[in-house]
Length: 301
Length: 239
Image (cartoon, rainbow over all chains, first blue to last red; front, side, top):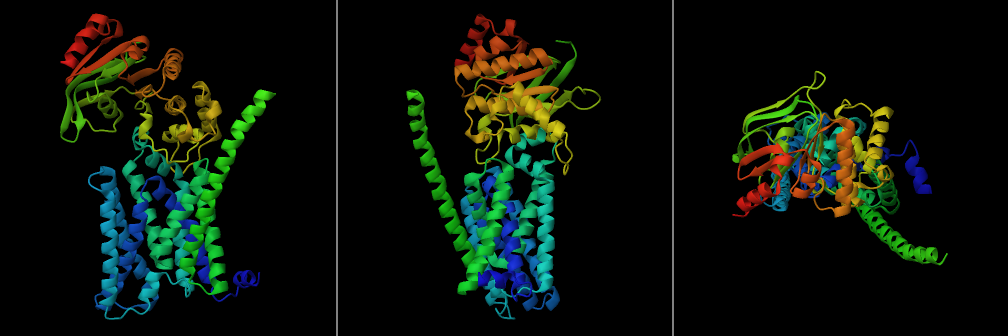
């Protein structure tokens, strides 16, 4: 209770970290539902890694003196580098997935390991050293300046508004592309906008919480929500609420027992998923047992 | 049935990429006609349908769609149900509601009237009680009813159906065909139905297009689906 009171205090030293965790927890699953529905989960693994590589690349350019050092614009620069790598990759990979030629998993696996390797190489060859950058790539959620929080909030709000406004279009082009064409929808445009939103969200999330946590929040809340959702509205809402709640609880646990926030969030998501899965199976089992029993009772009456 | 042409194909070549499936298709469909599109597997039935719908670009020739009420005709398309991924947690009502998306501007809400229209389409296809059920959990016949309701929700000028009775039992097939017959009679719809089921087409359609070895035979059911003619065509296909 004391922990909760401390965290909810408006003067709490790490309040920006709480807000960023909440934002990532609420927004990443809203984007993640499309990765799950379009069966692009593996892309969700590879993209945060690519995004990290983009961040490392931009800082390496700065370290090599090819870009000016401006401390205030460091966050924007990292976001730019991350987005620059993420969006072309998502477009390219989705085109390859749609054409269905070759093994998609092998391509995504290759992208994942190459991006991971290059991120490390770019970090160690950066003349400015690894200080600070490694924290950013690990998802250090502790020290977040007000400006970064405002940027994150503004971008995530934009993503949520666009996802909500154009949910019909995104759903039709995702579920039934052919039908969308017959309805005269510009399928390429809606696909591109959706991928842009996915790319921007992943870039921002990786910058705020690192690739591991970003992937965790993209994937696991959507999978939990998928167990119970009976329509699309429930699916998106459940995923977002589960993500937000887990992010907040994860922060509380990490603060109380002095754990790193990101891994705590992901471990908690894993536990919730496990419990939800077992709960769903148990309910299914109960229903299947109750079914024949009711049938027998019905026959007797 | 009127003599007005709803759709005509003039020297149209259809296929995928550089692979031409049918090199020279010439036909015209009168408004208010019920046409069965028959042919063996791989003969190009679905390819023709998708080319007319604009899903696949024609590789040559011209498709003329006669305007209805000053605008281009609206298609009601019913795809093969296997093409829809069961991972989507969509209620049947949400699936039908997709049909109205062509009339609703991006970013606008779907009005209460449009939603009531979607319910009406579910009622017309006898699927109203399925509206809250997950589409992925429905039986084959139930899915077809919901997809037909979605096609009707577009308020179509042309109803194009890709194998509406494939993979469903005889009873469900009969129910779907009775439903189509009712829609044809009451709404005077122009219907094109892809099928590989000769009996279904012979009993329900008024005209038939038979694709055979790159050739397109078009005529009335009473002319093209006589026992002698069928025997002749089947012998040719078996050879």
